[in-house]
Length: 609
Image (cartoon, rainbow, N blue to C red; front, side, top):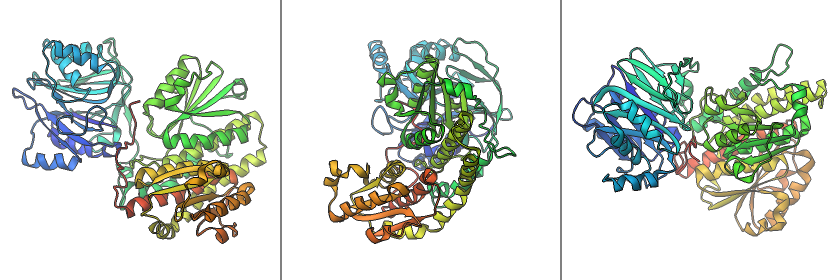
C-alpha cells in the first residue's frame, strides 16, 4: 500500500526521496507528496494527486532544497484521492510534518477530542490526527512528543516525522506496517521497502513492532516501546538492484513471467544437498513432531491463497496429512480450532500482508507452530514465524504476482516431499522421481514462453469481451481460480472460475453466444469429463479456449482454440498450466490499453486489514 521514504544526510533530500518513491510505485498509490525541513519558520512541502511524475514536474518549477525530509505515496483508505488528502500532513502552523502508512482505528474519537480543543482539520484522513496530537504534546522534545502520541493510537502505522525546531532530526516508528532503516556514510534513510534505498546503501536495520528510530547529530538510536535502547543487527542486502529493473522488457510483469524458469530452479536447487535430499532452510520438523500435529491450516490472501489450495492437495497426497485452507481475512473470525498441536502454514509474497500477520499472531498466542512461505528476507512474516521457507524468486515489482506464485507452488511441493519422506508415506524411488520432475519444470516453462505469440493472437479475438470464465476439475480448478484472478485484476474483464462439474447447478446459465470460456484440461483422470463439459458450454454458444497437455489430441476436436503445454506429472501441472494464463492476462491488459504493472485500485503489498 502506501510508501514512505525519509532522509537525513549530506545530499539534497528531495532527490533522494523522489528516487526512493519511484522504487515504491509498485506498491500502488493515487497521490504523492514530500516535506523538507529547510531551517525556516515552516516545513516546505508539496503534494499532488495522481502519479509521481506530476509531483516531479511540479518540483522542477518549485524545487525544495534541504538535507532532511520525508516523502510518501498514498493509496486512499480515508478520504478520496486529492491534493489535500495526500501526505505529508502538517500541523496548523506548519512546524511539524508526518507521513503514515497504515490505518488509525480510533481516529474518529481522537479527532472529536482534538476538535473540541480547538484544532482544525483540513483533510478527511485518519493520518491528520497524528500530526495534531504531536502538536498538542510537543514541549520542545520531539521524541517525547512522538512517544506520547503513539500511546494514544490504535491500529497499524509506520511513521516518519520532521519538525522545524529540529533541523537535523528525523523520528520514525513501526507498528504493524513495514519500515526499514538504511545506514550510509553520515547519512540515514527510512523506507517501506528495500528497493527505495538500494541506490545509496545495502546496510539496513529491519525494525520490529513498537520500535522508534531517532536520527540526530549524524547518529542513530533505536528504542523499544518502553524507551529502552535496542541494539540492532545490521543486515546486508545481497540481491542486485538490476534484478528490480525491467531488463529490456516493456513491463515488469512480462519480465517476471520470464523470470519463472530461474525462480523455479533457484527455489529448488538451493535446498538440495549432494544426495539430492531436500534441506528446508531453518525448518526443523522431525518425524515425531509431524506425527504430533493434530491440525494443519494453510492461511493466505489472494494469489498466495490460490497457491495454498495446491499446497493442500500436495501435502495431503504425498504426506497424507489432512489440511484446511482459509482466507487470512476470515480466519480469525471463524473461531478456528488452534492449540499447541496445530501447524499453521502462512504464505505471503511480501511478508507484510496485514491479515496474514494477524492470523499468525492468533495462532502463536494459542501455542501453534507457524511455518511461513515468503519471498522477502527479514519481512515481518519471516521474523514472526517459527520456521521460514524463502522462495528465492527475487524482487517482484508488478502488482499482479507471477513468479512468486510459481515459486510458492515449488515450495509447497518441497515441503510436502520433506514431510512425506519423514513420515515414510513415500518411497525413496518416488521421492527421487518427483525431485527430478520438479527440476525439469524450469525448462518446460521456458518452452511455454517460446509460444507466447500464439497466445497473443488468441487474446486479440477476445479483448473486447465484457466477461469470461475459467473451468477446471481437481487441480485444474485451482489453476482456474488463479487464472481468473489474474485476468480480472489487470484486464478489468469480469472473470470467474468454476468447478466444471458444477455447470449444471447454475453456472451454465451465464453462458451465452460468444462468451470466452477457458478450459484447463491437464489431469489425465478427469480429461474425458472435461471434454463433456466443453461440449456443454459449446452447445450454449461459448467460444472455448482449451489449455491441455500436448498428448491430448482429442481436445482440439471440441475446442475453438487450444494452447498446448508440455507433459508433466499431474501433481505438478499447476506450475505449467498457470503460465499461459499469465500471458493471457498480460496480453489482454496490453490490448485494452491498461497499465499492466499498476492496475487500478490495487496495491502490491496489502499492509492494512
